[in-house]
Image (cartoon, rainbow, N blue to C red; front, side):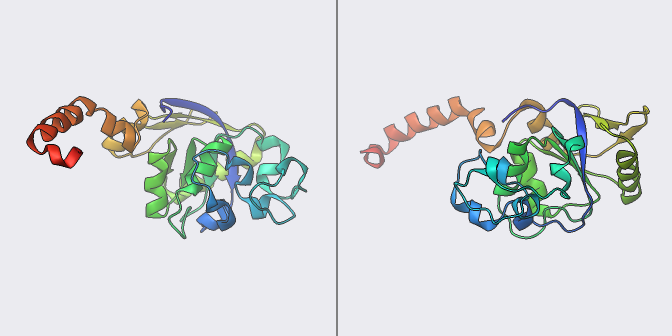
Length: 212
């Protein structure tokens, strides 16, 4: 998993509450269990004017000109500004896979669905909860300025706006450490690889029939 330290990123606004995981990545794309390749189908039903299916050539599909991610001013965005209860619905891990594959590393919202919130940390995305009034202010500033960017510093747990305002956010220390060091569940396990090998060697001696 890629480490997260400091991100200076363009902000895209998703001005909808209760965005569920089926909207983030529709169910027909869940057939694949690869962790990459879902970016082109992120928000598929809102992003395109036709119905998407796995294996389609997305480069020739008609785009919805009214959808925020299709607007030129938000191309290359790496920070998603959202409303309350983002990521509700089913627990599919494909949702953060699609967001990360598209290029989002940070999601800012007043609240998140619990399972989605946990899945973000496990897939290199930093979900940040802020007071709804602060989020409202960020939406307003974003709408008023093309190329609106924020600096997100995980070590100091701060967001810095273009005018220099610093906004502090909370994050669990264990999750913070995992993101700073690029450790997902597999990475955490591999930190103990020597202990695991030693246990397996000892176990083979104690119960060789288990390894026949």
